[in-house]
Length: 170
Image 1: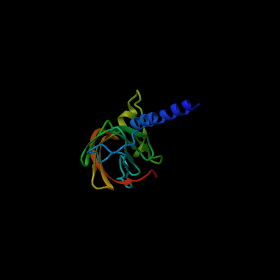
Image 2: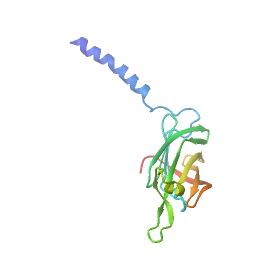
Image 3: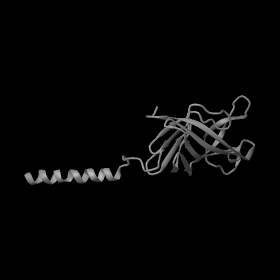
Image 4: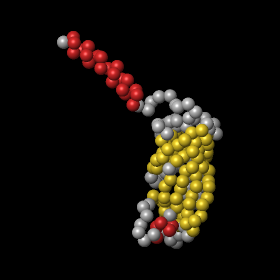
């Protein structure tokens, strides 16, 4: 009977080591000022894409996610370099919402999938999040580009959004 208790106790350090080595709870990697931080935009510029309510989260293993206030969450990776982080493969296609009164497009609505007719794709707006600049412990600038606008799919604009750091989800 003692042998069984001691053999089970011997497994505890092995199981603890395995858990510690596979978990992402460890100190931030050297030079990564973004690791496991959470950011929120409070105000945005109305127009083709309103960034208010946008949430940006830097995850383990160089992962990053952006949650749109009333839309999808998109995932990509990031490459930190001091106070600047390049965001990779982080984009979403959105379509404008129709104004029910006059039928004109106003703000960006939900994410879409291309349809075969091309009518939705012709009016789609592609948003690509490109960089994050950490200004201080509690502030960050997110740089993003829009490709396309209703009526002119070749238009491209670069914008910035100020974000504040959160200590937990709201």
